[in-house]
Image 1 (cartoon, one colour):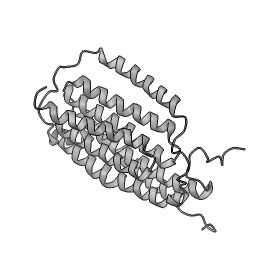
Image 2: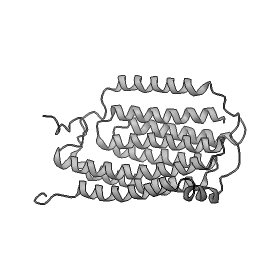
Image 3: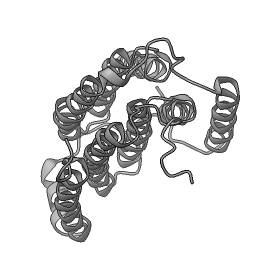
Length: 165
Length: 99
């Protein structure tokens, strides 16, 4: 194991443990916080893979916006939660199904001929920007359209109707 | 660490998300699991962009992050509406559509 592999191993362990907590913890607030742990680990992995800009975006959008939004939702709906209820159902069949899926995926990808080492070097931000406004300009514009639809739709769905509290 | 191990990590993350989707009863818990799945996809995109030296894959990671934000916003709006209409936050108790 060379020196570059150590941070990767630590970050991978962080991501795995965090993801396990996300799906198993009974307290949903703690599950959301461990989701933050997963996001941080993934951002670290992005840096190790030479995608520093994406790591920053991951931190800004995921940890800064999505996680805060989810925590808001947990607090807003706190009064509907009943602590006595079990947090999950059908655990054994679900675990079996997830394990079977993992075995299938792992078996499919393990036999492929991967490069022994991750190629070094970092992505130049200029290249990424050029791809965004040249090759992928249509998806880029569609994303902005989706943003508008999402904002209007979210307000329309969540806003109280007339005559309703 | 080889590329193979990181692919396995992304697969494990995806399967944990699927497990969470199947078991969680709380509606926000389902959203958390979906975020896990989307992160697994993003990790794969970034890994393959490095392995195959394709910058466009990173642009797709940006799209994934943007769509995850949209999904979270719409999901939370639906959940807030659900608590008002169905008087519950648990996904398996929301049986408003049942005749």
